[in-house]
Image (cartoon, rainbow, N blue to C red; front, side):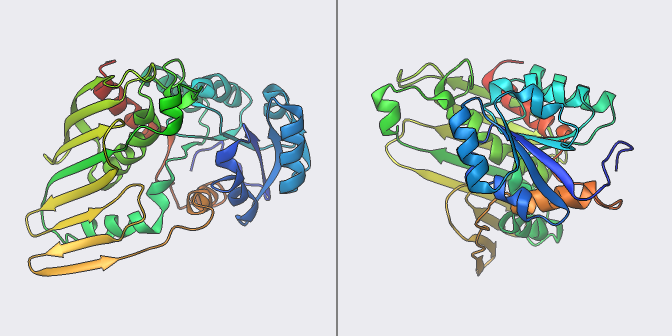
Length: 331
C-alpha cells in the first residue's frame, strides 16, 4: 500500500462524467461497497447532472470538473469520461493529491497513459483502471485453473472477436467510439483492450507484439479491422483477430496447454470450459448486476487495509496501452 493511500472511512468518492456506464455498471458499486460513499458527481449538462444526483441520492453535483477535483470533501475520484479527456482530468486529480480510478483504456495512446501513470507515481498516489474483468468471478475461475496447472504447461492463446456494423455505424451518426480524435482504434480501443488486459493478468506481460490495423468499411474515420501476434513472458504465444464489419458476431478465446485447453468468451454470456483429454467441465458463472462491484470492492481492500494489492492498477493499464499502440502501429 502506498504511503499516500487514504485510510479514513467512509472514503468519499466523486465521479467525473456520470454517463451511461455509471448508471448501472459502476456508479452504484461505489455506494454499495462498505467503507465507500459517493459524495459528488460532475457532468457538463446541468439538467442531466442534477437529475443523476437526485436519482442516485448523491448530495453534491457539479458542472465543472475542477470544482469536484478540488472539493475538500472528496477523497478519491473515478474518471468515467470518454478516453480523450482521461489525461486532462487524471493529471489534475494527481496534482490535488487524491486517489483515482480511470475508466479503460487508461488513455487513447501509450504516451498519454504514461503521462497519467507518472503523475501518480511521482506523488506516490494510488491509481487504478477499470479493467474490471480481472476481478469478476467468471474470469478468476479461469485464473485459478491456470494457476493450478489444470491444462499443464501453457502454450498458446487465441481470441477471435467479430461483429457486423451497427445501425448507428451504417447511418453515419456521431459516435465517439468511432471518432478517431477520441478513439483512434474505434471499437478495438473500447472492446479489445478488455481482453488483451485480461490476457496479461492470466499469462503475464507481453514482451513482443506485432499487428496490422486498417479501415476496411469506410463507414467512419477510426480503424475497424485488426490482427496481431504476440509473445508473453514465459514463451507463451498469442494471436488475435478483431473485425467490426463482419457478417456475424463471434467472441471466442482458447488457451491451449500441454494437457488440455480452456475456452471462454470475453463479452458474450457463455460458460468457462475446461477440457482435459475426454473430460469436459463447464461452469456458468453469472456476473453481478452492477458488474464493476467486485472491482470496486477490491479497491476498498487495498485502500482501507494493508495486505492487498488490486489486480488492475495504473501500471497494468499502462502495459495494456503499450500493447494496443503496438497493434495499431503507433509505436
